[in-house]
Length: 221
Length: 122
Picture 1: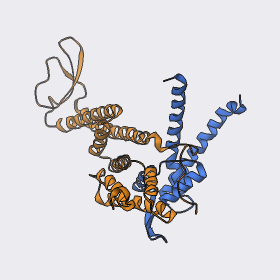
Picture 2: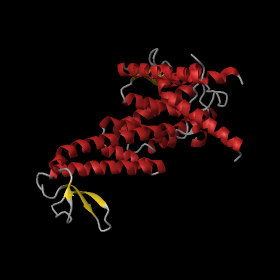
Picture 3: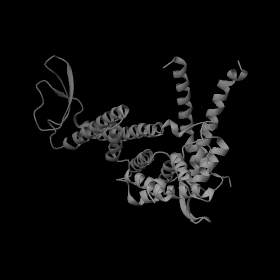
Picture 4: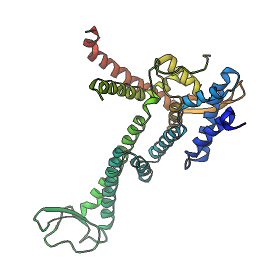
C-alpha cells in the first residue's frame, strides 16, 4: 500500500515533515511534541472506528501545515528559553531569526545590537579606566567642522588636541551601572517585541468565527 | 481593492488580533476546573467561549505555558489504548490566571461603559 492510500503512512509522513522542520530543537522536546500530536491524531481518527484516508486528511488539515506548526513551536521555544536565561546571545539568536523574514525584526535587531554594543563599550570603558586613566573615558572635542563630538575612548592613544574628559573617574561606577541598565532594558524591550511578534505571526486562518469553520469531527464526552 | 473591502479586512484583522490576545487566558481558564488533555482544551474553548482556534495553534502555546511553569503535564494511558498528555495549572499558573482575569474584568468593564452609547442600536 502506498502513502497515497495508507492512512497510517500519511500520518507518519506528516509527523516526519514536522520533525524535519524542528531540527536544532532538543530531541527530547521534539519527541514529546510529536507524540502529543500523534495522540491527538489517533484520538480524532478513532472516533469513527475506522481509519480512512479522508478522515486522516481532515484531521491533518485541521492541525495545519506541519512547517507552520514547527515554526510556531520553534519560535515559542526560543522565546521561552531566551526569557528564562536572559542571555543577550539567545535574544540576538531570536532576533536574527525574526530579521531573516521581517523588516520589523530587522529594526529590532539593529536597535538591540546598538543597545548591547553601547552597554559593552561602557563596561569596557569602566574596566580599562584604572589601567589607562589619562586616555580611557568619555571625551568631548570639536571636529574639523567645529561641531561638538562625544567619543568613548577605549585605548591608550592620545585624545585629540583640545579634547576634555567629561566624567573622569565617575566613568567607572556610572559606566557599570548604565551598562547593566542598558543590557537589561535592551533584553526586555527585545523580548517584548519578539513576544508581540510571535502572537501576531499566527496565520489569520488559524482563527475564525465558529460559523465560518468546519466543525470538528469528534463527539462530545 | 474597494474601500468597503479594505474596511472589512481591517475589521476582520482586528477581531483576529483580539482573539489571539485572549488565547492564553482562555487556556488557563479552561484548566481552572482540573486537568485536561489537548483535545479537551480545544473542545472547551469551542463550546464555552466560541473561541475557535486552529488545532495546531494550541499545542505550541501549551508547550510555552509549560516551559514558563504555568502548567505541568503528565502522560496517562487512555481506554482507547493511546496515551494522552494531560495539563494542569501549577500554583503560579493559578496566580497568573487570577491576575489576567482581574485585568480582563477591569478592562471589559471600562470598555462596556465606553461602548454603552453605541448599544442603543442607532
